[in-house]
Image (cartoon, rainbow, N blue to C red):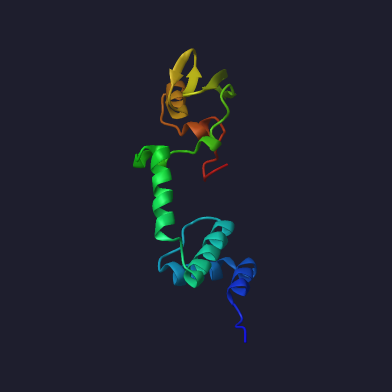
Length: 151
């Protein structure tokens, strides 16, 4: 006699659940408030959690291996873990254009940062501050990210 596995049906039901229903499931499965992310994120994390609880999570040796690989990439530096991924960075040589108070500003993406007016900079925010005299998120200033999140 075979037993019916309810997990595939639970996963399929995520697609038709309302956002309030997804948030209620999040509270049940994670025992905390859901993050303010989009529906697709909630669905994917809930799907993983449902399977993790039903079938078990990653083996301890897999977790240790992933942690070692991460440390190789970031040198164990926690600050680097939170930095913007290289895949989000424009390709070296890209020119970013922004008009500010009637003057066109041109920034070139370099291998290790950015260049503006012949000077190297580590961040777009430093360039935006030099142009405007006020604090800006450089990614927003140059139109690479909207104000509410990734854009």
